[in-house]
Amino acid sequence: MTAVAPSDQAGLRPGVLPDFVSRIPRAPYRSLNPTTKLVIAFAEAFIAFGVRGWTGPLVVLGVILACAVWAHIGRAFVPFLLATIPLIASIFLVNTFLYPGATDTIVVIGPLHPTWTGLVEATQAALRVVAFAMSVALLGLTTTAGELVSDLERRGVGRRLVFIIGAAIRLVPRMVSRAAEITEAQRARGLDTEGSLLRRARGLLPLAAPLVIGALTDVEEQTMALEARAFTAPGRRTVLRAYPDSGAQRLLRWVVALGTVAVLALSVSGRLEWLP
Amino acid sequence: MDWLSRQFSTRVIVLIPIAIAINIVLGYTVQTVLKLPVYLDSIGTILVGVLAGPIPGLVTGVLANLIWQYAPGIGGGTIGPFAITAGVIGVLAGIWGMLGVYKPRPGRGLQIWGPAALAMAIIGLLAWRMYTIPQYTDPNVGAYPDWVYPAIVVIGIIAAVAVAAVVWRRQDAAGAWVAVSGAVTGVVAAIVSAPIAAYLFGGVTGSGTDLIVAALRQGGADVLNASLGQGLFSDPIDKTITSFVVYLILISLSRRFVARFPLGDKIVGEG
Image (tube, rainbow over all chains, first blue to last red; front, side, top):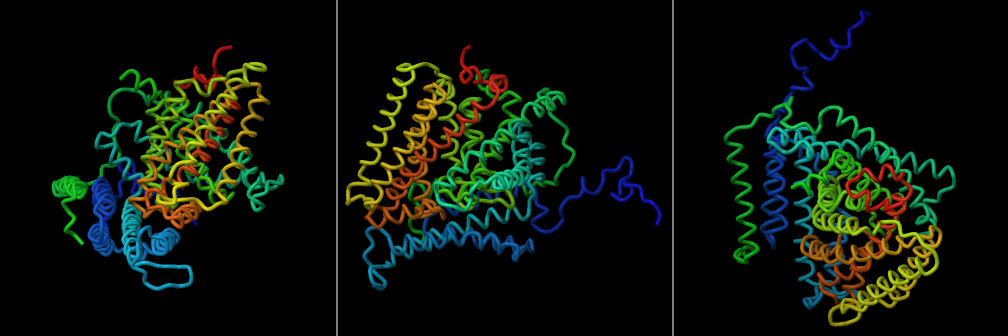
């Protein structure tokens, strides 16, 4: 066994950016500019919710499925679909059986009167929710937060906003494990997380207080670290990674964004009532 | 512009992501580990609002919900569109902070019990006004099942006793005003949330509060009124608890730390 220097292992050569810094995703759809994918995701969400009836959610679902097939991520959608089941079940139960003012009963089962009106409303609401969840999944599966944030910074989004978003996303997993540690420590001291409502409610402060106060102790150090590194200095920072963009994508972004605004305006003013 | 940039000192910029993470993690933990029927996902938003002002509060609330929705792994089903509500909560918290609601008001005897009684009267009036709205009492719009009224009375008494206990133990009337600000925030949050839940999700959000929506629908409420009725039940309780947790956190932090934030002088007071 010959000893390998750590820099060789990572493929580092002087003067050349290492692979993990400069690598740009190449797979279809994934290789689009992060901002393009963000614009598409927001447009899908707004159309799914903004255009009532069947058309909006179904068109959005069709677009998302096409993109997913193109990006080869069909199977990765399954857990996201499964996660919507509780909400979908609730939507169907509440709307089908308890739709106010509906009289077109499907069948009478004892005291229950499911109605067609309720079922149609429930199906449409469920389609909206699924379309929205899938638009979120498509963005999440094809774009990392780091890519998106650094591309937004290159486009001139202020470093304060970039820091807030980036730091928040990095902090969440750390704080999740901190919350788990605190829960276990308090359980070891007799905190009841399984008992009656009142007992569980009493566990709230022993859980929340250490978590929040512990997190706040970092503020002072982080503030000084940022100030010491010229965070508030004027002028723009140099961005290390640049994601490829093209004129076609710029055009696509504008068309999608303006098109969404136009469709929403038509929908709100009631000019899309003829759509199913 | 100066007013705005003063609210966004580096210290506030560092606090906001921590507050966002607190919102997400605590909201998630309370709903899944302790399984309590409250949200408690706005502690960070109210903390930033009170310490820094309305605009940082707005930014914290909106970004927290968007990041919660879009972040991989923790993604939350319906939380994203409620970014509007979260933003309003942040703005309100900033206004409470500027008004000095969280400022210590120490005293003895009538000095603390006078304001405390007034605050309790305001909450009582608000509760009475809220729970006699047509959504609960008029069978044409919607009505609650009978168990709700005793439940409201019990929750009200527990809240009043808890607030009074804190006021008495600290000999400080601030707790009562914090409770009032929380209840008002809750009413506003419910009014902003109801159309979002009704219009986007058919009135339900996939959590335990859907049971209340179903009960109201059973009584004949339409989609919007059922959502509003559910919100007016859950939100004031949730935001009062949240505001109180923020108050307890603020008084356990060192005065030096709190005073360095833009609205710090409104919280530590004089002396």
